[in-house]
Length: 422
Image 1 (cartoon, rainbow, N blue to C red):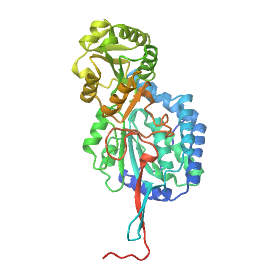
Image 2: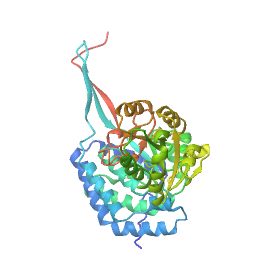
Image 3: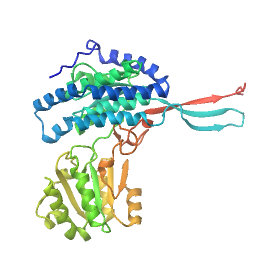
Image 4: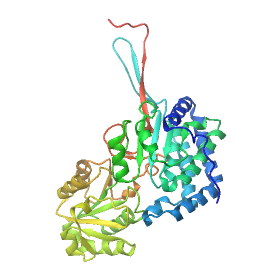
């Protein structure tokens, strides 16, 4: 197996490492878009060149991991997934420059001219679990948006993440940019997480990607602002006017395409007026794909394969081939259910009645709402962002997939001609 070289930053604390990133990020923020795009293309090339090393390291870590099959799927890289990472970087390079954009402008009666212009956030702290491709996506978005980044990946895939990090730094160097704007501690010690959360004035925002316990811990302990979602407990609602074939196709994809991602549907809500006819068909479809079911009393009475669910089951993000099912009276009960159990991530309605769709979209308080499509489209790449660094379910700064524009802030520029204030 190819060995990953030890980082020259191995003796630095997170604070010292982040300060190096901050200095390099200032340089990066002043580069032109051609340089940043070239760095992305060089990073994609470096990832492809390092494929054998990255996949060998990853295969060894996956083989040693004592985790569930769904967790192993999230850990695993292969040629297609690595190529998707490289292609994602090239896609980001093809996006418009998010920096220096005039977001608004206006004049005042005294002759002063005001502009609001986009600028980088500064330094991003990225804490993620299991999925090593997250590191490449995050770095790509930060390069494009002129931000530095400190990465702390999961311990199960630490060497894989280090190999990816090395390739990304190589891409920066090949483009003539300072690779210190991308940093990762050389070990997976848990102390790094707390140090990042307390790096006030050095790290500007923390973005966690992982399970509920990690994200809640980060939100509770951080002294640095956090951009995150607590869980990806997504719902698909099949309205009484749904096209049955469309519903079957969409639900199978929304639940079973990849069960371990935050955009996977975890709960099916279905109107009781169509449940007796459609629900057994949906259960049969998903059961053939390896899914099992828990549900409310109405659902379990219609389909014997559905075990009776507890209240806790409806609040669970399964991240596995398990689907919670609730047969509901109407759209009002659907909205009440989502408000009670949902995480604010993504909800979908399958319906042909546009009035019902509009009511659903206006009433559900989630970051993303969808009509007649799979919740698994809640992904930065699918939104046309090139990639994403995470999904935000809060109500400040950014919501939904966080791409290059969501990693910018702004400054005000004021233009005068000798005016003084009385």
